[in-house]
Length: 136
Image 1 (tube, one colour):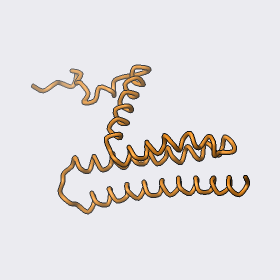
Image 2 (cartoon, rainbow, N blue to C red; image 1 turned 135 degrees about the horizontal axis):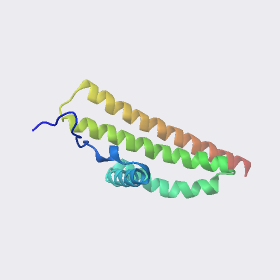
Image 3 (cartoon, one colour; image 1 turned 120 degrees about the vertical axis):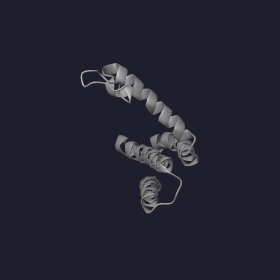
Image 4 (cartoon, rainbow, N blue to C red; image 1 turned 90 degrees about the vertical axis):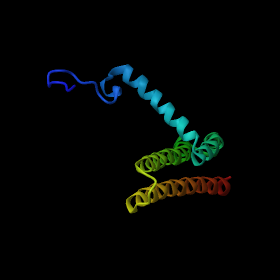
């Protein structure tokens, strides 16, 4: 049975019709589900556990609020990039398990993004630690 142009059709995603606080409430729920899904990924879980140590340590190591934000932010950026990388890998895997140049390229680029975020984080923390040690 087809619908005529005058008949409203239900959207594929009900989130698209929500507005205001109702949309925000549901979006927050989806975000929590995304964090739960991330927790099931070994790499994200390791980074989250490291963040439980590093985020409080940033309050001790940072000598100004700017330094605290840079230290903590670099840790959070790693977690954000890891979630995005996992999303890319999940979408590629949904398409199919067969090997494809473009699938490999997408996964490799996601992995490279995680590597760059980790290098940024390590460099930020190393600079802060060196400054703390050299300046007392």
